[in-house]
Length: 83
Length: 161
View 1 (cartoon, rainbow over the protein chains, first blue to last red):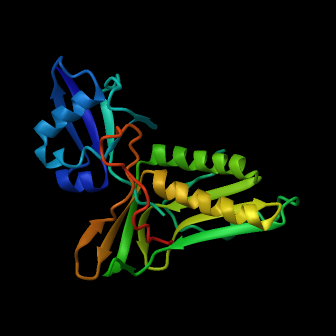
View 2: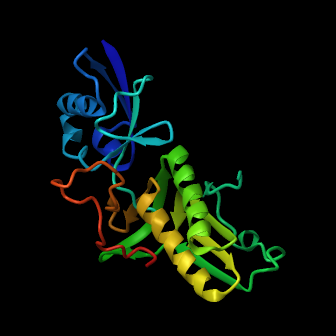
């Protein structure tokens, strides 16, 4: 089992009631898409908001097809509204 | 390159203008976005900006650099405020210095739009009725496939217009 650490921003944080959550992943979780599918199952309240989120590792946007970052940390960024 | 592009403190415009530099420039375009007291018919009391700061800073620096290159202007400076803001507070400043006015106007507009659409910054509005909401914005995923709804084209970007 590997721990996946999701960092939640803006409306995701509001939905989850926390700015971070940890999900234990089995050996079948390889890609970012796999990680998000797992998160959607484990935290159904977030499921409907994940499609429009960008995933970030460090300061870099990663894609759904990319492997899960080595440190297991993924920031979930919902649609932005600065300015 | 270490000039701050995100500020948790109130933003002061004057130092960002660099009026004592850039003697080759005859144009200065300035955009200042301030907090408005209404949004889509609701009365806004105050708001809060939050960000994924590492990526937001990177995106804004990239916007500064790409704007300089695209429009051939020597100076582009952007600062976005974070934290709790009152009505009238400065939310974003964009300064462009250039040889002539046309490219200054164009570059300034481009840079502000690019930050609004690309930097991971969120605006949470607090209304006079006691409720609050995050303003619906632009999806910054870059891997939505063509069968999915497009993340963003122009919808109602009414903020600071």
